[in-house]
Image (cartoon, rainbow, N blue to C red; front, side, top):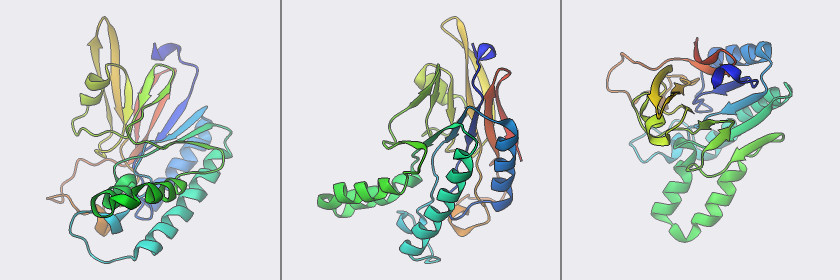
Length: 226
């Protein structure tokens, strides 16, 4: 049961470096330092990899400049997180896989070389990286995955257990009875800048996206809205 949980887990949502929301990220760091978590999880889409999107895009940054900036920002973030003494985990999301997927589509014979190089961008001192975006991180009886479904609650049905996801940028928690016990799904929202060109793919300006972060402790799962 979550109520008996001794861990305090902070989850950072989709950041999309270098197109992050600076104010929200600063607030998230201040909050997690106050909380003194036992675990910190970045739930995926650490980078945006806009330069390698398969969708129509503007040439706002050259690929090398985007990757260099994103890596520097991510390194700084994880350095601050590691200082807390928490166990740190980096999960990969669909945006993190963009360059690998473009290589698979256009130059499959070089995919392994590209994949090895890309995965190095997600390795940080003191951080355990889940290097396959299909893998699920388990902490206790909770599953952590970037996510691939858009409706809040669908992942817990797919996994058959309590889970934490990102992906849809829409924070919240839902519960249900499952085989005689209560399970839940926590979506941790996002920490990106929705006004940045790479994030402006919504069909309308009205958005359900919610800035914030996730927390799980003895009081259960919850979304902290910024």
